[in-house]
Image (cartoon, rainbow, N blue to C red; front, side, top):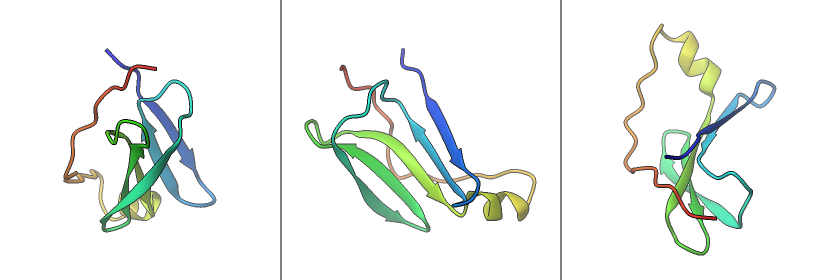
Length: 77
């Protein structure tokens, strides 16, 4: 089982969810609608999600539902 790290930058209105315990080389891939997937450079597996304008989305209603076009997978360190 993996832990999910959650980071929110209020000034930038940016939420990031990550399953990596330690930072690894990777890149963000735009999947549309201000949503990006974080991809491990070595394994090419999705290891996180970044959502821009998160607070703006939350203010539009009580619940936020994002249809993500991918599955998060744990990568052994």
